[in-house]
Length: 156
Length: 288
Ligand SMILES: Cc1cc2nc3c(=O)[nH]c(=O)nc-3n(C[C@H](O)[C@H](O)[C@H](O)COP(=O)(O)OP(=O)(O)OC[C@H]3O[C@@H](n4cnc5c(N)ncnc54)[C@H](O)[C@@H]3O)c2cc1C
Ligand code: FES
Image (cartoon, rainbow over all chains, first blue to last red; front, side, top):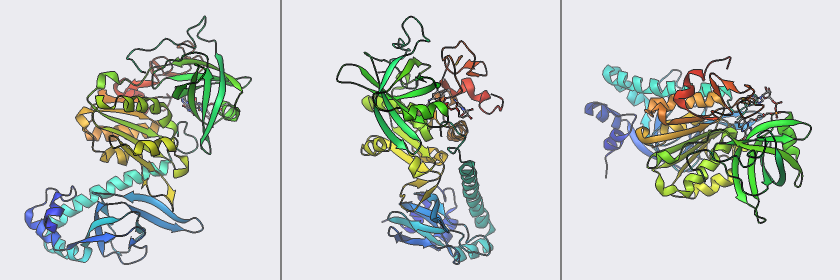
């Protein structure tokens, strides 16, 4: 059976990390499983974790009265979920719900933050990776806001 | 279907390419609240290539270009040609109101086709946005018919919401096959949708095709195609392997009136399907 470190090492997100950093990260990680409909986290609660999805699909949602639950984005295998653990006040801004059975690696944010404070090289490596994820999501959100298939577009 | 060169324009190959023939509505299939597929019976055989379009004329209202989204041979030997129409204005509204048995004018097929024959052995990536799936559908059916000739095949489709997905039944059927990869995403969704939510470019970024040996066919709103091209370039797909279907208002559809000019190209005659290098520099020019 693969160790957690081996599983983490194989993911695109952590590719290229030094062995000692992988050890540090694996020390803050554990495998988790969610059933369909189960929440990985809920808006307003303290953000103590982030997830790397290995299998299944998670919906990032917001409750907007009177429309109800609105799905903003889905996250799937190989993708990172959650960065509120990184940014004060460390509270979730959205709900994250498993749409299918979800297998993921859950990382303890407090644990990782502490290790990053004492090893800035690790901190920088992680920051680079999270910035890339955030930039990708921001770009996707901008395109979504354009409403490219909406009224005014011909082939929409 | 779909040899490399253009077919004889059966309907317009008579005395004048301007002259529409009679098409009779034999089927109406509602796709979404504002999209309908009309089956139009035309006499005899009708040959076309995937990516081409017809000019549909509603008596007393006007004429518009609409892509061919499929065909079948009727029991009486005539051909039923399918057109999938989104209601946006007068003519498309009039088309959508036509009932079974009513007739319209049809001339075509016109324009360039999706090139496919020269790409045997490659991975194929069909990327559609909104009703852009309509012109890609005949290409996809052709690929399914000749599945063994190609590498991995991907259909990546983005729509506005789950309610705006066209060809839902086809997508469900195709998804059952093990030899093709179909991914659908919507920009906005609510409870009850279990698929992807997010922009179509995300599907393009993640689909496991071989960028160096992939041929990509894109049809959708221009801005969607532009973002998609950026993502394909980031992945290392050569521009020469990317084909787009463009749209402009049309009148003659045979390269006479200049209505559909796009840079030095006429979309009706040189397009609508273009290789990316031919049109890239005009894609984001506002006046065009
Ligand atoms: C090659 C080609 C293939 C097409 N295939 C399909 C298809 O398969 N299904 C489909 O639903 N539509 C297709 N279209 C688009 C379709 O031709 C237009 O939606 C139609 O001409 C609109 O006519 P209308 O009278 O209903 O609307 P109009 O009243 O003419 O237009 C409504 C609004 O749309 C704008 N507009 C009209 N036509 C265009 C255009 N071509 N490009 C940009 N803006 C435009 C007008 O300026 C106006 O603001 C295709 C267009 C081309 C050029
Ligand atoms: S529509 Fe007349 S030249 Fe193209």
